[in-house]
Length: 609
Image (cartoon, rainbow, N blue to C red; front, top):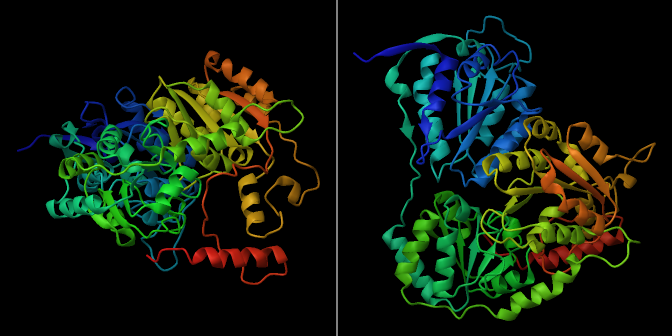
């Protein structure tokens, strides 16, 4: 008869978490972020306290941003480890739904443990309970169902015996990887059960590396050999598979140029001769011209999102599309020829299958012409009369960076400018959350990156609009002594969307603060605000002052914030591509009518999916 141990359901969950290991012997769940409330403090809170020496518990200031920290942590580590986040029921739980969607889109592991209502229904309705008038089994946590890869509601302790292995299978499966929600009824958390001791035996979760099917490999190799102008699109899966070295070897051996998505950027060093740079809507002319000419496109670990494909209008030659992807859902998109495999395994198999094949390679002028056009934009301006541009700010940060710097961002103006202009020296030097483009990811995400790789120099680029969305984890970073640099570019509103509004014929309206309804002009002192949360903060007025401030950043023992006012209008005029943003068919504005004509013309170049 197997031995048992009597634990509450919450104690059992925590003990199980501590026993799930990576291949290097570390706990897969590196720690738990928690904001306690009546739905989790008595049960899970007690269990976490009892196991605090085995698994750390950190307290943040917002449930969504705690999740963002966890997601940046796992993203920076290529999904090799993850974190858990717990909340009470009601608003604490629903605050995490946005982060769950971010994890789902980016295929990132995240263990969500929101408290839930009483399984016994005795006190119904409890504080913060959402009641469904026609379904007694529904709670607010049902919001997680469409944005998680696995959802379970724990209404009896012994259900954890099946739910927890399923949760870890999901988080560690390369094809199914994504967020998991275990909605934990608060009375069940406190219930005891006699658990088999074997349930808590240490288990190592091996990274499965799926090799390609022989038929799919042969078909892909034949297609590549027949191509005159092949191009590789490197996506985030290249990093998740830890396949950057294999990609560089594959490209060099077969002389095939590589272009990078937002998630794939830094897969190759920026100065690799075969790296033609960023692709798509925020891409370089070098990359986009190569893609327009391509007769074959090999996607490696990419979802072929619309920013990558220029809303499927980028590939003018209507090329053969091969998708090397571990997930069938992504491998089959847009009629692609699937090569279902782990990126590293697939690239190595393709290299062997292609033998001595070499493509003609890219025109070297594509790359040199691109940098000749954009490098002047990042230079320090002469004189201090005008507001600095975002390009000039990026140039200053680039000059202050080094081999160990990680530049990170998520939404607004900076993602497009960084994608075009940032020169990433090695894998992991560029961290962009652009799958969900979630405003408010930045500050919390910087904490996660620094926790994942303490030796790295982390620089967070964030606009004033995104900073205002979510900045409270600045206080968490200060409290925990997590050092990183934040560069806040204050253009006094949502400059990126204001430019999009103007570009589609609209009037400037409700984006820049000067174009919103207000009785008093906005005058936010971001440096003072950051300092009030414990950061070292300084306001600068020029690029020269910005560079001087960045030069002292390594002296800070916690978050270091530099604020600079910028011009909301200029963007990099070179590169880029059309993006399908529907323009009204009718309007009283002549500008909209003209934009509609241009829109209808551009749509004719889209490839039907």
